[in-house]
Length: 252
Image (cartoon, rainbow, N blue to C red; front, side, top):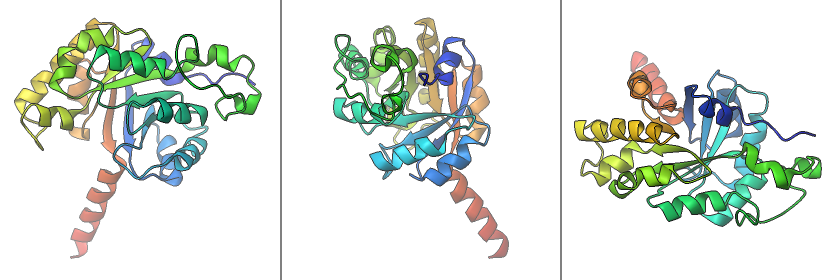
């Protein structure tokens, strides 16, 4: 049994834009539907949705064979959470609220086995093919993709240093949290926020890493033109809300 190839990581390294969608429904059925819709990646959220480890494993299994790489967002940049999501087969992680170089270094260390890191060792996990993948512990890092979120003024101040950390593959800008920290709570479309985000994309690209972002469908092209390399252009909850509201409005 071979170590699964991380298509998303390789695409970022090649500079190929990756279009994704956010999933907060915590459902393996929704994850399966989205995985076969043609997206390059699907974000399985556990920070702002009631999504727990066994549910995420079911979502990862349901996405097998789809076009989309699953990206798991743990609730925090935490060694234990990261270890558990890696063990059930997540190869790409998006880690929230990383503000300093030390936090970025820890994010990488939590994904690596000793001596490069502090990931706990287990040989019969789903990630290791239940023990069938030869040399998994020695090779796992080759296909792991570590993405960190920069969503505060402090993170932007440290952006180049964070991006320079070895093992960080991309830096994701969180529009809503950044807007709040910039004094524009609930208004990520404010010109000051856009200016900060587009500047961040240039700085991340200049540092040799991939910038990412979540926006609505209407702003996807603007972000791609600004240099963002992995862009989520929608979210499953929002799609259902808008679609159901519009359908009901036709008859009410």
